[in-house]
Image (cartoon, rainbow, N blue to C red; front, side):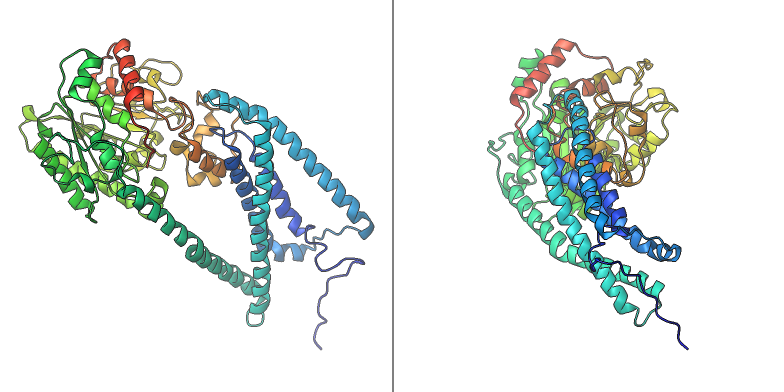
Length: 574
């Protein structure tokens, strides 16, 4: 005789949906609420209300979704243990009202407390604190976004339950549950990729291509020492927007002499663009031909600069070298993409690394082919994704030190292999923000000019031996410290609390910190120089130390910085 079917005891007055926010759903809602509150805690930089709303909504929604998934997967165990949460109908309204009051009080209290902490964060990086109106907007926007995403999660949850019921016709309950999860994940992934991700990428690509094909409001070079000028391998109209900015900008011999008070030369600038769909190998060949054509290998200093996604080069970086060498320099860069850096990294992570390796290997071979006393001093540099790509030319720290005469890596992302390996081998006790590697003999991590001579605790280094390599990175730069690992693992830089311009109250929270730092990257260029991802003023003294060892006079460095502020065009980073 078949066993009687199991049934769930009914509760008077309880409809099919009345328990939606109770029991199992309550776990997910609780996790979402905690993430919502924590998202207002300080992070690296103050955010606008819109980006704070994004951080809040995404944090709450992902925490809720995680709660739904966990309860769904653990439901067999919950059912086996007989765990139930049932509220008597006559008490249900009271419980709901009390819950709402507690939630509102918690939200108000936490947001008020965090306002003070976020005001300190803003003060540390030289920005105004968020206003009360900003917080109200962020609060309402975060709620709206969280509820919108949760609504999608609910649809997914309903879909899971539906597919589970269908699959149970042919599969055991436990296998039907797993199969339903896999099927829904596949469907959501396909839909997101086909109708959201692909169309977004197409839109971004089209906008990026329009920018690359546009022409800046700058005069075409007339010097044979510039790519795009007379005799150039690539004509001016093929250099792309950022290539044109790079070759049409920079100080002339006369301007360098006016600032330094010493005789100077006309600097050389070489750029290779993707042009008419050239391969990276062809672009790097064009750069070498341009270096030969312009006489770059006869200059005392030759610097290879890694570009960001669109092919952007920081003018402060290049011009610092040109002023400090009296124009006796050549600088080369090559484009590997016309997409914004985040998109370029996601769609073709190997492109910047391949470009960095190709350019360095070919230029290095050309330099080594010349007599030792006729070779230029070879330097390398790059900022953010440009540093990621540029460092790919070297196997490890020893390889870097053996092949170059110096380097300045700026705002290097923490996922850069060379950066990661050197940081992991730092002197025990030195912080991740400014690690000490081999007593600073050749390689030094600096958060500002003061770090050129001493570590984070004020202890002086010895003599900086050649070749000198500097990793310039602000403690408040989210582009340096962002990592997928922030989702589930606390990084050393938060645990150590060693950043001079970072709120000491910064704490790590699962999921939430990842979204905070991710949104911080969107405002990384908002702070004044010396904070966030803005390295303008720091580049002159850092390059001076790397090039010369002995510092130039502060008066001369200040004149160069002032001139750069007055003359460098404001072009957005790629």
